[in-house]
Image (cartoon, rainbow, N blue to C red; front, side, top):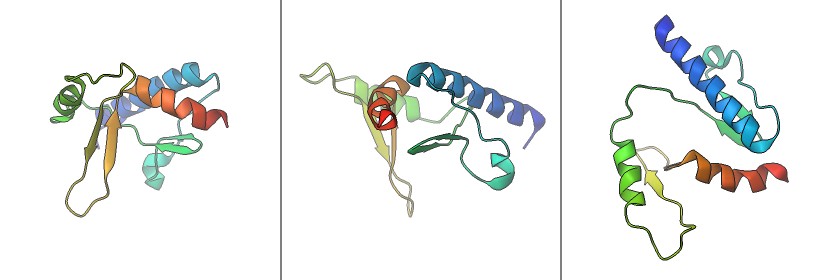
Length: 109
């Protein structure tokens, strides 16, 4: 991994930590050494968060836009993309604001 890639990744982790710290009213920090240890980037119990900061993430934004393009009868509905590669477990992608709403309840307990 190039130094530029590591710098961009660390910047993304700091950006997300600041956003989550503001959202949850508690200090959220990056795990230092996670690249060496092959672990996730941020601990926010009960969540383990892996951060990816890239110039382009294939079709993911198009898929989220597709899920968001047809509002349902409830304004509170949250667009979610469920995806799975062959032989891999399912993943869920959603807007950060929606995830914070869901996670706030879990984290405050």
